Image (cartoon, rainbow, N blue to C red; front, side, top):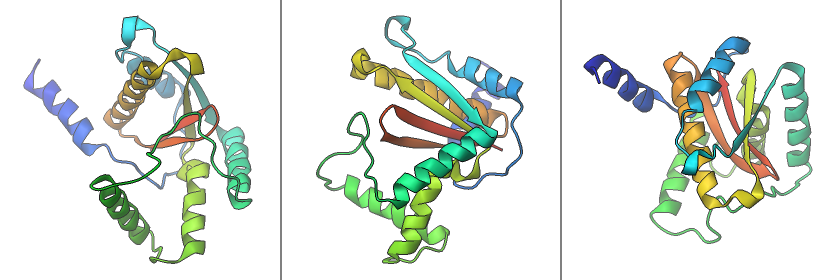
Length: 186
């Protein structure tokens, strides 16, 4: 592998970050298709490629976001298909999570203890932080835990490919049954 290629890969990995504010500029459909094709080169056990992808844009994405925010505002508890986080946090993971959360909230002007502002900021998750493209990646329930790892590698490839094209992304953990998403935009 040439130094230029390895440097570009390193830059995509190091430069990738979870962006929480996007420009409204549309991402060309052909570029989205290209990114998905590149991401699909992710390894998977026995080449099962267990991920299923749905891309949502425009009014459909905005309507979906509004529905999810309404659920959030009603206090509807997330119902993920699997446990993403542990039932009981412990150090050092709890410490890292708190530091990350406080840093993110501070960056957007949410003061510690301001529950209303924190609620509004959490609601932005459901609008994909204004991204013009929402990508949902799902795995059928009976595929086993290894398939979740395979899907994770697909999502990582997608985010790195997007970064290589000057687009940022923000992975989201699943919060509603059958919904895992990755927002991608410029």
